[in-house]
Picture 1: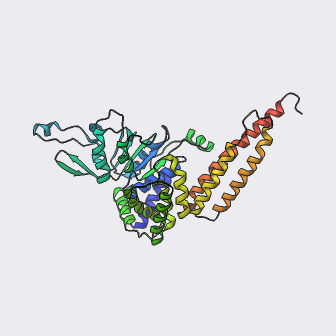
Picture 2: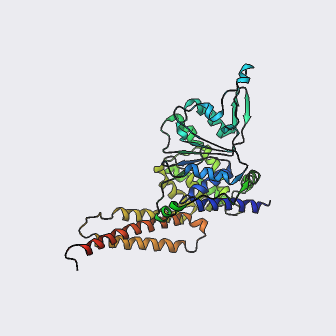
Picture 3: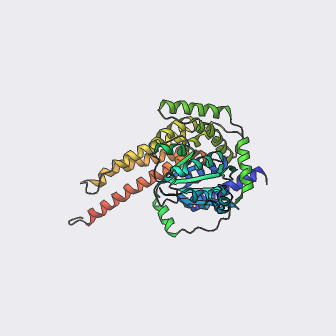
Length: 385
């Protein structure tokens, strides 16, 4: 299969997942990028946000991929991830595990509540996901793991877990559904069998193509500038992470069908450079300023719209409808401005702006409904004309 067809197959899988998993485009893109770069993805969000479903469905689109999934607790043991000790080996004075059906033999792994990992698990897990090696007694085995996907409700607080946290190049927050239309669709949604698939060989070919894609001088300078700006903001990023960022930018360019990674493709680094969720907005601004100014404008306009929405009067306000009018008008103006800015921009470059537009539409809709309810109550009030 040609390199072009490999890319088309990957995109078909991505698009099919996006059609089934509502409001999860960012997480899906990050999952695809993790596979293309042999890196790992952390999905950060509350329970019930389809984190495990996303990874499970992704693996179903990869023919013959061996999938492993486990929920960790504080009491989880190494046997759960790496297999029990072999009794026959012990009889021969050898320390060896039975690894069939464990993370050791998986192509794709998903570990829920990853930061519940205790010290008995941690060292082996670090070596496995970073070096792709597993120490099985005296034997050191290379594992087939392409990517480990993990989920957590929160970032780690214990210092001993920070090394594990840093192994996840990509980090994405996964909130509950925000759009009313998404909830309506969810109520009727079914998940059909995959029609778009890729093979492990195709995926490995894609990884090779990504590694061979040239990183343009402007992309290198963009990364240097982003690092300098983040240093100025007091946000430190490890050297290991910066090194991996080059592959991530290449993967973004490959997905868009480009022959060279440019500064534009550095926008993907918004998912690789934050440590705490409170840093996301700062990282977005720094990266967007360098790589995609439209994203920066979208972030700023979204923030302005959110400020307007937060100023909304509460039910019971004596002049509720009148008080809502200027807020609705300003939200409409922001929406129009952002729509005009994205009108002639390729979809791949306008995705963040589209997210902002959807949020602004939701806030405008909520205020409009509040105004309508207020008017309805006025008309129903005793003595109303």
